Image 1 (cartoon, rainbow, N blue to C red):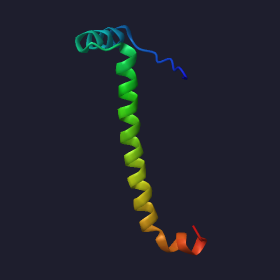
Image 2 (spheres, rainbow, N blue to C red):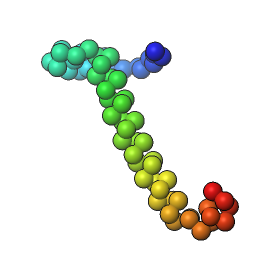
Image 3 (cartoon, rainbow, N blue to C red):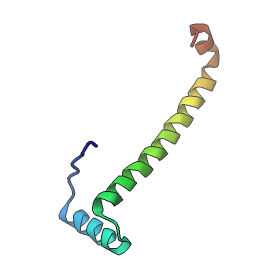
Length: 66
């Protein structure tokens, strides 16, 4: 597994620790969950934009053989 260091302010770290304690999870689990949620959202957004552009430029893409 790869590791990533994320700089947090003292206030952010304390808030993350409080949330972790309140939910019975570790700060690392919460951070990983947040990253995964964001990646899924961005994957969907980027995919939708790619589809929109492909439809908009379908004739050009067909001429290019793409």
